[in-house]
Structures are given as C-alpha cells and as structure tokens.
Image 1 (tube, rainbow, N blue to C red):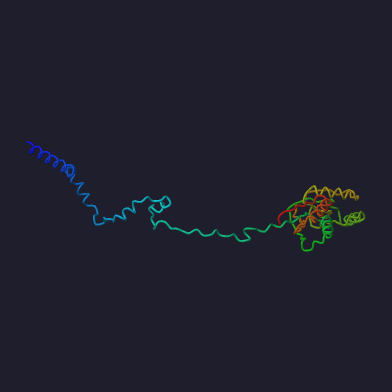
Image 2 (image 1 turned 180 degrees about the horizontal axis):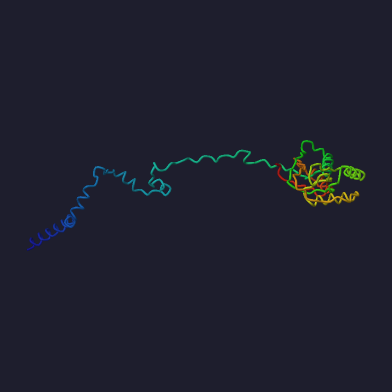
Length: 249
C-alpha cells in the first residue's frame, strides 16, 4: 500500500504540473493563437543583458521632451535670429516744424501788416500766400451817378488822409462804387468801418461781396518765442486778423 500511495502522489504531481504548464492551451482560441504566431518574428531583436539593463534605467525629466514623437517632414525648425534694428529715422523721426500763420489781409490792412513785419527782418523765413474766397465782406460807398461825382468823392477821401480805395469799373449794378476794403469776415469789415468813421467818413457801409475775392496770408517758418510774442502784439493792433501756430505745410 505504501508503494501505491507514493506512485499515486507522483502521478498527481505530474498531472498538476502538466496542467499548470500546458493547460492554458486547451482553453485558448486557435484563431487567436495563429494571429499571435503571425507577428513579425524576423524583426524581433534580442538585447544583451547589459543593453536591457541600460534601457531599464530611469529617464531624467530634462530628457523627457526628446522622447516625444516628432515628424521631421512636417516641422521646420528655424533658428531665432536677432530682432531687426530700426533705422535712426524710424526710431527717432524728425520733429515737425511749426509755422505762424497771420492773415487774411487786403487793402490798407495788408499794407499795415507788411510794414510791421518788415521790422522783424525775417528774410526768407517770411512768405506771403494768396488765398481766394468765393465771397466775403467789404466796406464801400454806393455807386455814384457819373465819373465827375466819383472824382469829387475821391478828393474828399484824400483830404481825410484816406488813400486806400478802389473804384469799381465793371459794367453792372456796382459800377462806380468805391471800395474801401474787402475782408474775410463781417466783424473785420465792421472794425475797419469804425476806423474810417473816426477819420470823418460818413457815407460808407458794410456789405457782403458775392464775388471771388483775394486775400493775403503771411507765413513765418522756424518760429521763435520772441518772434511769436511780437507778432501777437501786431495782431492786437490790426483788429480782425487771425494769428495761429501749427505744423508747416
């Protein structure tokens, strides 16, 4: 009995070992086994023990980006170069020059403005430009009956010290009217009329002039503080004139 019992134990151990070793094959799908056998066995490379241990070492975090998959054909690496340097003109653009504009003048006002500006000795820094307007205001004496009446009126004006006048010669409603000055604004015309009345003129009046009128504006370049101060004094003397400072054009 003892021998039979020993052989029985040996046989049981053998069966148990066989089941543990090959029993999984009995429960596996044959098709899946054939699929596994179709793996590219020719591409399997056996590593040496030293290489396997080297690959099993932990990878430092600093090297982690190198492990990311990169498609070289889809990514173009461009080395960053130095930022372009702006030229001196773009980095420090020249400051726009400032000019003084004084005007607009005609007749006796123009003569007075020229006389005042001559005291500043501005040379080429002083320019005069002509500005046309479709309409404006004028101080005038109504048209007279004939040329003889015109000559008498001119004599009276000259006796009062008034030499800035113009006799309208064109045919029409204003023929033989006497212009004592044209102005861009009505206020400037009223100021001139008030000045004439102080000189003794009684029959002049202000009206709108519906015709192309020419005026003069003075421009001073390279403005200095002293020049600007003097010209503001001139402006105060010539009522109705405008003095402004802005970019030269």
